[in-house]
Image 1 (cartoon, one colour):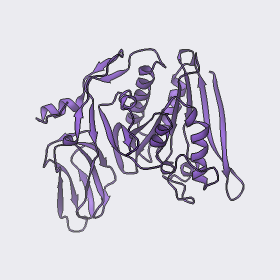
Image 2 (cartoon, rainbow, N blue to C red):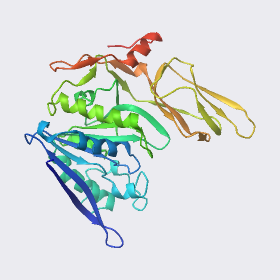
Image 3 (spheres, helix red, strand yellow):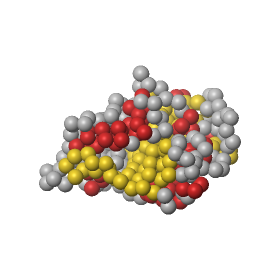
Image 4 (cartoon, rainbow, N blue to C red):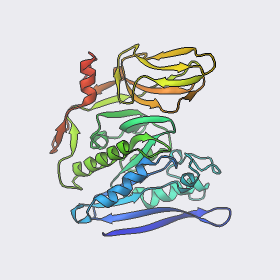
Length: 337
């Protein structure tokens, strides 16, 4: 296979050990476009690492029209620490882009990753998961700022039923790369701290769709005939301490007042039900049962803040039905177009 491997030097640690960003380049039948695939900006988010490694094994460079640059683990220090961030540096890598050449270690990693790899790409897919205990359905996140509003076509090309559109934070990779003219899609698949075959398969399927959509692979991408754009989200928090027993799953569509879960005291047995405040999609559910007052247990996206997107045009697509749209219709929830 025509794969080149390397590492970008970013700095050194207390004992002189180098901090590097390992990467590979897979060259196809032509140089452009260049797709950047990266994972583990947060070191405990593992599904994306496996997605990139499996794609390396799956894709034949002779059938690749363009170049793939893969960075399975960007934040190597956080990865070694089994942590979201480098515990010594204390900075969130996905809040400091485009980085600083002479900054902290995390800022230097951001600088070298951004200037050596991101800026040279045509577009990119930034693979993430929810935090530990936060199980998220597969979906892209389109992040906007007052001075930045990206095209949603790149997110739609992943072929998910739901596209999340909301305000992002300064220093996020998707925002800072987009401002430089490199569209990067944030793709959420599962939760941190574990590998899950369902979400790994979803990640591979989404990236394959993206590559087919933009002509990097032969074949028709599989895109739902109806995709839903949802804006912002609400967190449902516990009103008591105890154990959380979910009564719904991530991806469910529920009506207002539907039972989301129950908090049960391990001392008294007292139960505290939690119900949906509005008609909504359960985009994420807590998978770790121990909670205290104020702990987030579910992440909801209301249909009042969303709409059905018009069909994608001028592309050869393999259309499929949307389970989410079907669920809304079955429950009598109307979506605007």
